[in-house]
Image 1 (cartoon, rainbow, N blue to C red):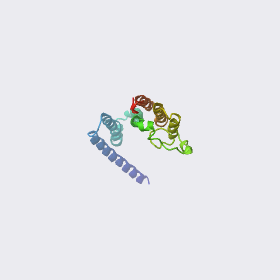
Image 2: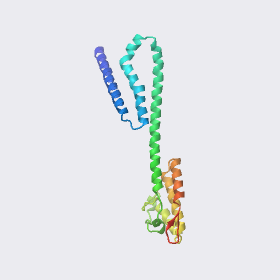
Image 3: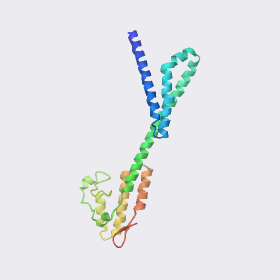
Image 4: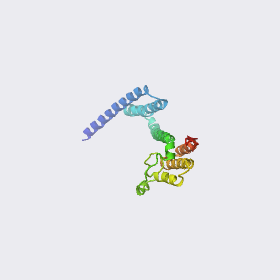
Length: 215
């Protein structure tokens, strides 16, 4: 039984050696196709701090320690330092990936927020939505928005009911309602909040004498 276990163990070691060599070849080739310095740095780190040490452990460690037995104590220290470096690397890598994902998500939200503007049809009532089902409307913060202008339909109808004769007031009220709706439904960090505020300030408009919207 012990004989078979030793054979299996040796086979696993050789499989590990083959895998490490293939992994090394893959990363060496991948370095030539790195798209930026970050990918290049990651590739070099993996080769220097993961693959080369793994090759040493699998191929040369036992022979080296037999030849230099005094190095055994130093090897224990190096192994601890090496483990700490690997843990720190993966921690920083995962955090960097998370930061990059958050930055991309934030930019998508900012672009979405910036694309939302009140039109003349929203102000003059041509885009007015039907009366929503109040129970469904109140079931979420966003409510029902049938005309897709990012203003709750019940809020939009209430503005028209309160200011039927003043398009300028309706323009201001609808813009404020849209900014508040975007803040409640799209903001998840300071950058997206700033985008809502800047968008509201940039897109603030009134009606001219001909009924057109002017900043």
